[in-house]
Image (cartoon, rainbow, N blue to C red; front, side):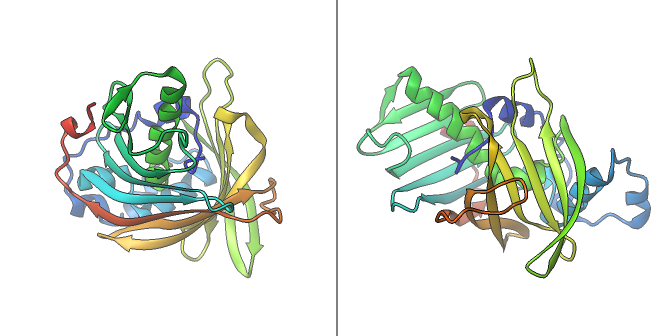
Length: 279
């Protein structure tokens, strides 16, 4: 993957979350009272559990209040191959840019700097400052840009419109108690979309791990298991350390080594402009 992972269609569905950013950051982070929560309407227990976790991580309004983010993305496979990119996003409109100084997994045949972008209308690619229009390359860009964005914003976006929640029960793993919720996406034309099976720690109300499929690559039968470690940055809990590998729907992993993905040097409110995302 995004490490990967979502279908492009899924990412487009998710981009529907352009909530009003007029609230102040204090308002967006302020915990709801019991009365306010009691007035919420939930589809089912799974929906309520997801809502509760966003009270811990922040919802999408929390990210909108931050305006934008810049960070270093490092993806390393067990064979030592690595991608390193500087990622930039504007949350309103889900604009995305990545400058890959190392790309042994992403377009490895291109030597030197590659830049990928999504400006709100089109995906584009540059190699050593030269625009490339190869359709095969651009398909990869159309996968990477929304995927990388979604991984970063995933927890707040679990309340996006068009999502379906199914409570699957609870389980104890390594002496920790979890609620399991299946999150799926509305499909168009019966096209397969990604499935997420999240494990919400009953004590912390955070997702410690989740199973996911990769519909874009036809990987629907055998999921991957992602495990997360959080870091508080500028008041937001962000899963900056991540590792994943093949699993089954009981979250039992194989003996294969882990793939590691780390986010470092995260800064919000960088005064990014739309022009920064145009080719």
